[in-house]
Amino acid sequence: MTSPSTTYRIAVIAGDGIGTEVIPAGIDVLQRAVRDEPCVLEFTAFPWGCEYYQRTGTMMSADALDQLQAFDAIYLGAVGAPGVPDHVSVWELILPIRQRFDQYVNLRPMRLLNGVPGPLAGRGPADIDMICVRENSEGEYAGLGGRLHRGTPHEVAEQTGLFTRRGIDRIARFAFELAARRPNPRLASATKSNALQHSMVLWDETLDAVAADFPDVAFRKYHVDALAARMVTHPGTLDVIVASNLFGDILTDLGAAISGSLGVAPGANINPERHHPSMFEPIHGSAPDIAGRGIANPIGAIWAGAMMLDHLGLTAAHDRIVRAIERVVGGGGPRTPDLGGSATTRDVTTAVIDALV
Ligand code: NAI
Ligand code: MG
Image 1 (cartoon, rainbow, N blue to C red):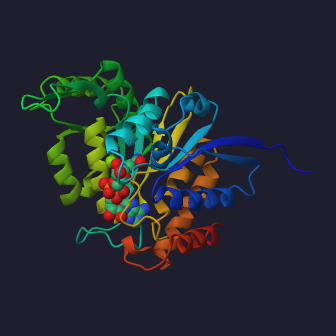
Image 2: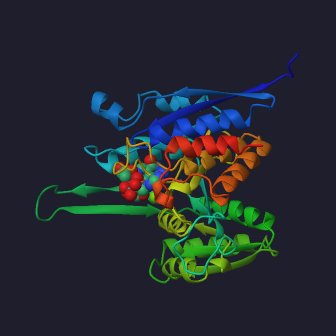
Image 3: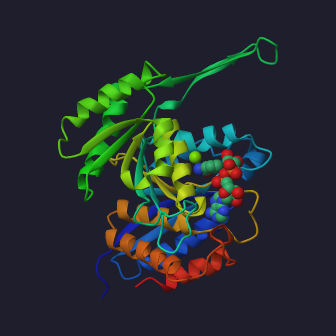
């Protein structure tokens, strides 16, 4: 007799380049991690991405978003390929999914794992352990604007940021609630209200109003440029960071860099109300410079998969995977070239599976 089990339906968009190498690695680890849980992970692969675009003229099929709505979660590799403009791959696949499914929280842990040589001298895992809560539905990536007089000397482009009190309020509440659950509740807000006197002043005012509901969280605002510097000079003073769409995008690549490699950093695009599927992805791109060689670091994708299990309620499996990653990188296990080793994607994946206990 087997116990009753829940089936979780997961849509897989491996995408392009190393996305097609790290996502199968992640799926193998996830399947193995839930082996003894009363659940089934059912993965359904979709062929969308730049190759699909070159064949069909669109990044996804016309009913893609309707199809995806039926899933419990989406597991994404990366999209982008030489020959397809990056704004096409981003605006025809990633941003429509984030917007349509109201995945307004982009959650990005930034941790220097034990055993990883970080680039900051004298800083270790105790110093670099942060998480960014990035606004993911509006702001600088609202997509508003246009171009006029194309190709003429007086061509103009306008890119409009859109900030709403409701949009800022909901990301602020998510960030404060997360900070309140951390051992030493602290929240840093990335602003730029000295120069951006409309949008970022609304950002600050809304954050201040929400802060009043969380008296136990130490709250500070930093201009984003100073915050970027602080991540390098005093990373140990930072814990949870809340940022707008553009600022969070930039700060989290910096966070990944000080964590040793873009290849280890995971990300989650979350619809907290669970009206729609959330989407989990490594934060790196398709890395055409190393694609096809089997040497991409799978850890970011594996860790993103673990975050997906956590979101689905499989927290024990999440914890097992993160501990296995920690054991492999901290215990002298195989590492890919981005971490200074010579192992393959497969070597690291097998080592993580073997370290699952
Ligand atoms: P990228 O993240 O693909 O690569 C930046 C550098 O990091 C490269 O040198 C790459 O080899 C290295 N790298 C990235 N992930 C790695 C991994 N797992 N293991 C080892 N090394 C790794 O960013 P780039 O080069 O700016 O963009 C390449 C393409 O990816 C572009 O088309 C871009 O639009 C797309 N992109 C897609 C994203 C997504 O799908 N979410 C995010 C970022 C970029
Ligand atoms: Mg980015």
